[in-house]
Structure formats: C-alpha cells, structure tokens
Image (cartoon, rainbow, N blue to C red; front, side):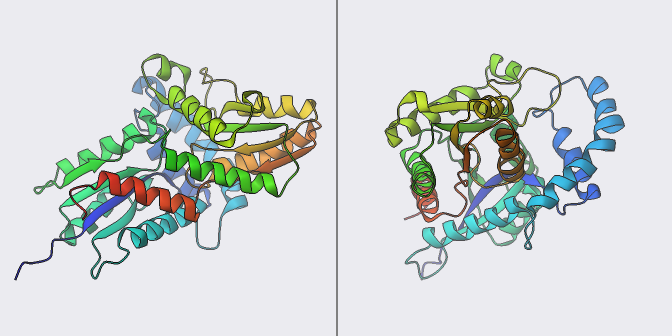
Length: 332
C-alpha cells in the first residue's frame, strides 16, 4: 500500500514581539531587532555603542509601559492574533481531508517562537516541504528580506535542507485588497462619514528606498488598489508613514504630523494600517491611543481606527486562496 506523504509546513513569518511587557523582555527583543543589519545598516563601530550605551539603557522601560497598555491576558496582541491566524489557515487548508495535509506555524524573526525552533519542530514531524508566508504584504528589506534571509540561513545549516517556496509580495492581490476594503466598510457603516481615510504604513528610512527598496511603491500601489475598490475619490484618501526612529529622514509624509494637521482642520477621519496584517503596538498604541490623542488635542472632530486584518474570516479565506496558489503541485 502507498504510504501517505508527510504534511506540508506553512510558516507565517512575523516580525516579533517581547515575551512580556517588562523592561527586561523588551530589552532582549530590542537588542535582537536593532542588531539586524537589514534594520539598521550603519557602521557597527558607530551604531553598537549607541545601541548598547544609550538605546538599550533608556528605551526598554519606556516601551514596556506602552506594551502594558495593549497587552492581552493571553499575551502580546501580535502573538495572540498570529496564532489565531495560523489556526484559521490550517483549518481551511485541511478542510475535507481525512488526515492533516498542512501544518501551519507562526515563526518570529525576533523573539519567540524563533524560526530555528519552528524549523526544528517541523523537521521532527518529518516535514520536508515548507511554504514561507510573510505577513508583510509590501516587501521591505527590513521585514520580508530579513525574515527570508534568516529562514534560508537557518534551513541551510541543516544536514537535510527542506524544499522551500515563498509567497511573493501580495500588496495588490485582489483577495488581500477585498479583505482590507471590507474592514474599512464595516467601520464606515458604524461611524460618522469621514472626510479623510488615512492609510498609515510603517515607515522606512528614505535612503533605503533610494537604494532600491520597492517598499514605498508597494505601499502606494496598495493604496491605489484599495481606493479603486472602495470607489472613493482620490482626494479623500491620504498615504502616510509612521514609527519613525532616529534622526535620519524617513519616508514622508509622517503620520503623526498629518494627524495634527487634520486635527487643526477639525476633520473627521478613519485611520487604517494596511501594511500590518495583525494588530500590534504600532497600531493599537501608536495609532489607537497616542495618535488619537494628538488628533483630538488639535481639534479633530471624530477619529475611528480600522482594526487590522487579524483573524477576520475574509482575511483567513484570502490567506487560504493565496497559499493554495503557491502550493500548486504540492497540495492536491
């Protein structure tokens, strides 16, 4: 009798999160994150003294207080939501199967569960084929590039190197855009009609884009596709970039400055973060708490934050369709 094939592994590649909302955990996370040359590409002789002598001495305690505002009973919002996404995707990919054909796991670039530990788990289960599914719709060297570099490095050091496929950037994928649009429409239907839809993407040093990173082009393509799907006038939709770090010029316009400007105009706004597939510190605190306060303090009339895609059924269905396309020939 023919033996059943081992399951296929699907890795949801996420950036990462501290293990706990305390200074020690945040320090470990930031040390790993900010040591990545794809994140900060400055000369090590210049950067490491700044990182260890200043940033890791002051920033962890401040960031821990912000994490405490959004921490869930089950853990970090990013980790909790990512696990729910993995469970939902696995259920959809195995629907109707007698035996699981696909195992879906979350792997963090920084923090836990690490890529290496998840590869260990999959290899122990006899899995020989892996689909890497970056949870970053728009490609950036500091996110997708870094995660894939770590994945291939960890896999390549093993005696038996698994076969690996990678989901291509899906910044203008119709299923992804549809899931985003549905989330925006749900918030629109339960709030005041906004003057402006603000699409806030994570920032990137401007120099990285000038050196060839396609990230800003991908962000603007997402915004254009989403605006068409919503049927809104271009003038009602604005693209901005958040989470600036350091003194270097980053992609503009900056979200924080735009929120203050719209507040002074006494605008009514909705804010969505299409580059984040799961709510996290940057969406829940930076936009939902601090951003809202900036806007209201300047005189803004109404502020509605659109939740990220998270484990919404429309997004899980979209993930399943994207994964099945990439698994063609592996998954019947």
